[in-house]
Image 1 (spheres, one colour):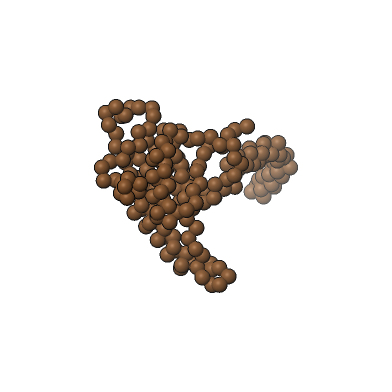
Image 2 (image 1 turned 90 degrees about the vertical axis):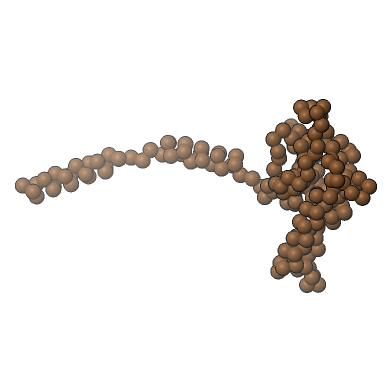
Length: 191
């Protein structure tokens, strides 16, 4: 009797396997959905530029993508360098809930006749020295065998309500710290 059962079980298994068919339609649908998801989430840029909530960015029609560089973010509340708040703007009673940015520096925040922002200058000098040290230790060299020079590129993300005087002080400070090339970050205009 056990031999009879095993033969019957084998026949049932063969019938099940013979009747089983692969449903390609549903598999193709799944693969198309995965492909669309991957294409939508694919980025060609390696930049990791960040913004801050409440920041009103200017709009640009330029097709250029920003290169990877150190980033300064200017909001009505303060100045942030590489994710670290460096300077807080002082707020008076009239500007606490204002829609326009005040951008007033606290006492002692400026030197050189009110042109240079001390805390931002110190932070930028430290970042430049760190970058120069990393380039000196890097195996990548120029034609003469010297380390690559410091490029001095700074990406500036500023609120569109910023006053020119405040922006000029930030650029002067960055220039004094060795950053000579400024890239202003703006939102790309949708066409």
